[in-house]
Length: 259
Image 1 (tube, rainbow, N blue to C red):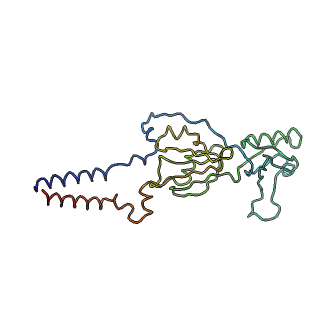
Image 2: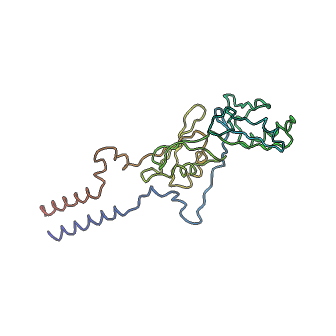
Image 3: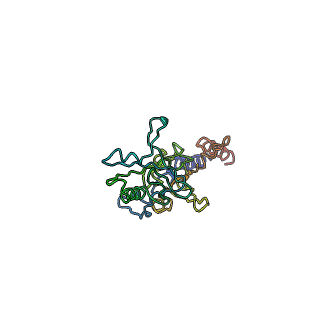
């Protein structure tokens, strides 16, 4: 009987040690690209295109500084913390209203396309012969919520902005974030559409329609089961080593009694 108890205890202890030392499969990113020569296709680049209610800053330069200043929208109120350059808000019809030039349609255009359009307008109408036009985003961003180190709104600072950019700027996922079920919520044609991305699969990440983000996208990282169970009293008790050691001891005691 003593020998059987020892064998039983050794077996259960070994199982517990193996379970405690195992590496969770849902933590590592891009598991299908772990080898040096791993390759996968990437979704076609998607450039940020302007929409109504977006804000942009437009700066026009020229050799004739005085002439160029006529076309720049300046803050003359003395407020704004020293920020003299004001932003244009794209109206519901997709237009901005510039000094001297007037209304220009920018809906559905990239930053570079807006800059080229304004430059062409200035040259064609003989306002400025040598304009240099710079267009920057002012209020474009995405929101990252859930199990990341720094949740909140992140400004878009480039023409092509990916989910990897967003997660990096949010400080990466916490250890409690579900890598295999990251959701991207996007406004499309009056509806909110959900894309699900599995960060443990490089092929799925880089080929997802949501790999390249759009302004106002919302990223949500779900908590894993241990984090969910933490919301209740003793929710994770049955999953701790102490609990299972107690159960093993109890089982050994029972086996000793009946054997």
